[in-house]
Length: 390
Ligand SMILES: [Zn+2]
Ligand SMILES: [Zn+2]
Image 1 (cartoon, rainbow, N blue to C red):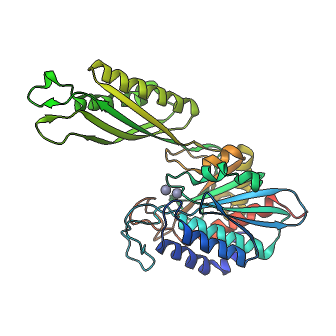
Image 2: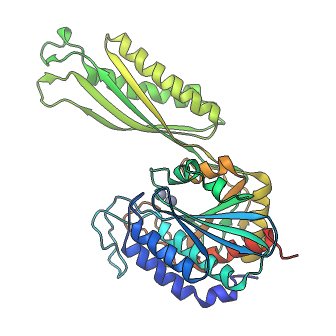
């Protein structure tokens, strides 16, 4: 079985939905148009619809047969606050907003699977189609979980996909263990003492102290992190001063911290604070550190990863399912769902001959519509495999 024939038949319709979502991007927790279309389509196909979870989230419930088994399939719906550089007909119609991560495609993919499963009903159990808001920074998956997603809609396991411009179309990476990093934010306020730039000895220069903190933090990656483990600290903003001859009172630093293991995440939170405060103290300055935990690492459960690989192989062929691939330091809020239920997050290749290879979050990115029937077939194959009729 490559792509399921019935799904291939309505692939042009899926591409239309996807391009319509692309033309009308909505940011996290503002996906009212998108979620409205999702809810209307699910209802049209006879799927029970629940709205309002995490504000704009939608859950479709499709029951068949008598089995008590259940599965969750998840897609994200939000776009990014960035300007699109593409000029094709379905480019963003809203300035400063763009589907730069392919969530338009994920939504259309899951809709395609829902339509197929509602038509064919070749399974025994309950499928929950989970359309979440705000993956890009808002943690919509975590909000849905906190608002009772899995209590209201029990799932034995939960599965998600993300398109991958670095993988050829028709391949998938289905890898057990940690596949994406924890993604935390850090803000540091360095307080010195303002003064005349020509008389630094009677001031305390927060710019110098801040610069030393930026450098010192890199030693946490190179000297305190196990060389076989991984961590990233990127200080991406440094704000201070207003004149060439004034030593400012304070400097503000912001950045992101990525780690793969909880122990390393704990260590970074502790040591970043220690290094910033210690460096500041050495110069009679003060550092206030605000460390905000973002998304946990995305960790695929071994048993469900085997099941996902089996379903992917049925669609793609076993030789096109990659089972071993190093994690990347990006983050993904599907991790909140994987903390609650076992499951697997699959990366699906979307790089075709002519398109689909532009990186995520690039202003020229576009989801490759050729991936739609592949992704929908994978979800459908997974449901028929995990909720068998007999
Ligand atoms: Zn993204
Ligand atoms: Zn994404």
